Length: 339
Image (tube, rainbow, N blue to C red; front, side, top):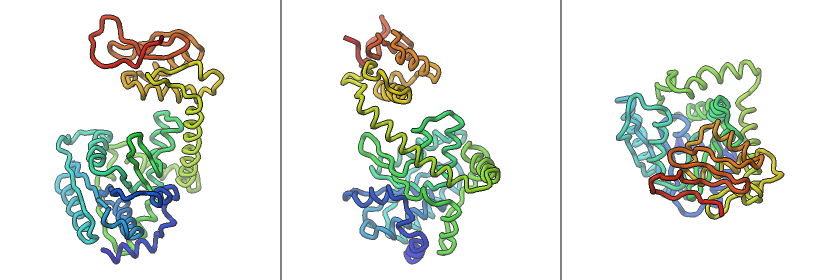
């Protein structure tokens, strides 16, 4: 496997990986790199490329395989395959299993179970998402009306407030290109038969929508989507910097509406999203309720809007804050009251 990994690295040299990830890796400290490995073509290629391109990091690689236990013997075979690969490379492997799995579990539930396992084992986690994955994600999020933040996913370098980071160096490569390189190097991988079904939205987009979209476009629409993702990420980052200059939230989590006067609506929307994140009780706001609250604070209208059980989003025209309903039982801490 080591010779094959070197052959794969020759076919996919380091400069083919995403530049933002390369920059992160060059500045990274001595921490361990967790590598999410399913046994499929993309994640296997990622593990082999990390092993080959960063030889000094080999002892710091931690392969992470999560068994969802949804495909019977095939799931166990995936884990055994990953064990053999990692043994051949001399890479440590940690295998987890979904103790609370249900055969009718949603895609979101399965993903959250896997991410919970990954989060517990490494702060820097590498994923094998490639260009086709990014196009699929964009189409899925367009269907639900996402803004720039959602449409810019998956990001090559995704940082979290607690210092964790997710890394996706293969976003510049098509899945077919990765498969061709693996075949040329004589490297086998595992195929998930579930990917050919239409059970999940992503499968339907991948197997039906994306091929039709490319044929209709008459060009490499996935490359176009990849460029759009990069541009949307730039715009999203610019909006975040712009909002930071307004400093709309005070130390108590209240939104100072007055500071946003004259700002574009995109900044108002982002400020309200940030307020919701700072005040988790407001996360129950429906999309319609969020839009209603946005209109009212933007016009300076005093408002008192339900924000779930026992709480209200209140604006006096100057600040937006959470207020407990009168007579509600104590427990927890409100986002703050206006002075």
